Amino acid sequence: MKAYTTSDATLSDVAEIIDWLKQEATAGLGFYHNRELIEKGQKQGHVRVIKKTKGGPVLGFLLKAFDSISIIEVKRRWRGKGLAATLVKEALKNFEEERQLGIQIQCTPSTSIPFWEKMGFQMLTRERGYSQQAFYFFDKSPEEMPEVQKVPVHIKIFEFDLINPGTPQWEWQVQGFELNKETLLLEKRVGTLIHHGRSWIEVWVDGALIFKNKAKYSSPVGVEYNNGFMRIDKINRHPKSDIS
Image (cartoon, rainbow, N blue to C red; front, side, top):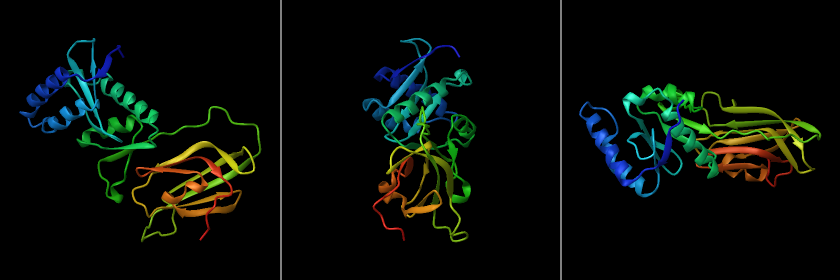
C-alpha cells in the first residue's frame, strides 16, 4: 500500500468531512446525521483523518469513543486501498496503550462485517441477541517463557443458560509456568467479552479447583475486569476466596 498520512482532524477537515457526508446523504447513504457527534469528537481530539499528503483533501476519517470506534468512513473512490485498515490499526494501538482490555463496535451497515472480521474482530452470535455487534480482544503472549516447572491450567466461564446450565460459554486449557509458589504465568493471555455481571468463572490448576466466583469479583485469582471484558495473564494459586 502507498504511504498515507494520518493526523488529528482540524476544524477545516471536519467541515470538509461534513460537506462530503451531506452529498452522500442525498442518496440516503453515510453518516451525515452524526455530524454533531463528529464536530464534538474533533473538539475532544477523537477524530483522526487520513490523507494522501499532508495538507491535502481528507480521504477518510475515524471517530473514536472512550472504549469503541463509533464511525469510520472512506470516500468511495478511495476504498479498497487499505485506508480504513490503517485508521483502525492506529486506533487499536491507541486503545491498547490506554490499557483497554478490548473494545466493542456496532457493525453498521451489515456489509461492513467482513471488513471487521478481517481486522480481527469477533462477531457476537445472533443466538445471544447481539446481531451486528463485534468485539476485539487485545491478545498477547509473553515474549519469553521461563525455564521452570509447568502445570496444566483449566479456565471456564459460565453464563446462566436455561438450556445447558452446566456447559461453559468459554473454556481454555493452557500451561502455567511456576514463577514462584504463589504465581503462575500463563503461556498465553486468556480473556473475552462478558456481557453481564452474572457470568462466573472456575479456575482449575493441576486438576484441582482453586477458585469459583463471579467473573467481576475474580481479581484475587488474577482476573482483570473492565467494561465487560476480562483477561488473565497470571494466576494466583492461593486466592483469598471461598470455593462454593
